Image 1: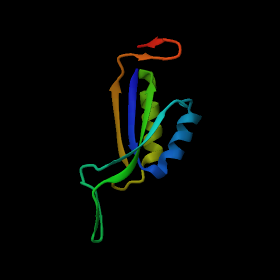
Image 2: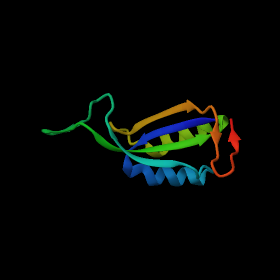
Image 3: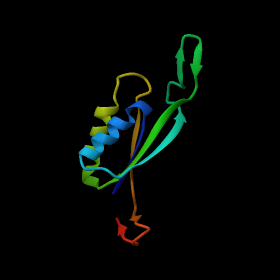
Image 4: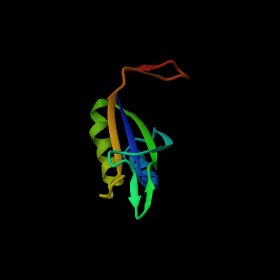
Length: 105
């Protein structure tokens, strides 16, 4: 299994969540986050925004589903402007369902 972590623009959240759900990936976790990338924030005129609001999506998927999930996020999140976000994919050693004790590897 893999964990897909996507830091996205908050205004893109609903579109991405609906697209994931429509493709058969309804399970996810959403969190509000603040941060900045390589550009160290955003400067508009004389105003500097050192940290920007982001939404963090966490999606656990089977190894063979990673590319589909990543492509959905890329397609829906990309505006072409600085601050579109970042996606990280990492290995999940095991997942345990609390209610049933079921273990997935």
